[in-house]
Image (cartoon, rainbow, N blue to C red; front, side, top):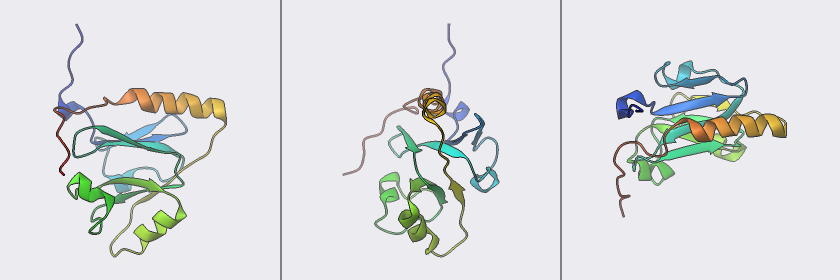
Length: 134
C-alpha cells in the first residue's frame, strides 16, 4: 500500500534544470539555486493547486509584488514568476534585491523528456483545495 504524502513532505516550489537536476526549498532559499539552464519552475497557488512556469526566458522570485500584480490572487506571498524581457525588466525596476534565473532551450526530444518529468513530479493539488477569493 502506498504511503500518502503529508503537505510537509512536498516542497513549496521546485526548479527543474536541463541537466535533469532540481532545486527546491528543501535544498535552500531561492537565491542559492543555480541561475542558468532552467526548464521550468513548479509551485503552488493560494488555492493549493500546482502551477508550472515553463518556456520562459527569465524566472524571478518576487518577495514583494506590487499592488495590482498577479500575486494578489496568491495572497501577496512571495512566489516565482516567469516571463520575457519586458516582464523581467518590470521586476528589475522595482526596489530591492533581485533573484533571477535564466531559461534554456533544448532540442525537441530532450525538451519532451524533461517536461514530462516536470509534469509528473509534484502532486497537482496540495492538501485541501481552497476556493479562490472573488
